[in-house]
Image (tube, rainbow, N blue to C red; front, side, top):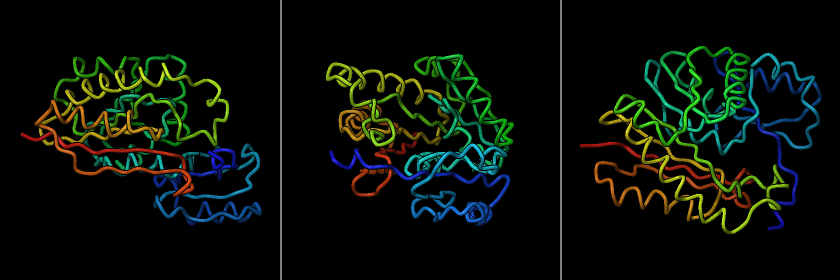
Length: 260
């Protein structure tokens, strides 16, 4: 698609634990950068034609985090509350994890898992920069979550490993690394992670399954297959962002509730 060859805007998520969107917009204006509020996320800021951000003090001081506005949907859809126990099943590098913590007012508990030690370090670094203390990074395969935390979590986020076809504007090299065989294998992995994550939920708990891809095989089909074998779960909302329509990263999110 020609759209994937265009330059994407830079998106920032304002850290409401430390500041306001207006303050960050003012800081950007001081640097001569024209930015505007996101229409999709109340903490989002967008600007085109950006340069290096290494001198942007607000970012270094943890007042904001680089994150596309479409992906901010995941934490907002899960709607975690202060004091809850939340699990982020595939958390690195911690963008969505720290967003969850900010929405929880840095009160409660978040277990953030990944299978790579280096990525666990990234979660810790992002949390420290943003001033967040409730995140517990854990080296764990998400397919084992159900055994580790059976029926304990209030909320669970599954930002599943995916083909990444929704972020080709930002990661142009991905288009040369994908092959049909890989795309066929991903749903099986996604289904296993979703199955295990669902087992961690308390009765009445909520789960959000999300990806940064646009294929039905990795999105709607995974949810439909799960619901067909789990009558105790209900789909309450589903969001799809198509890049050429929304001018965001391509993104999918579905919210499920565990019921009787």
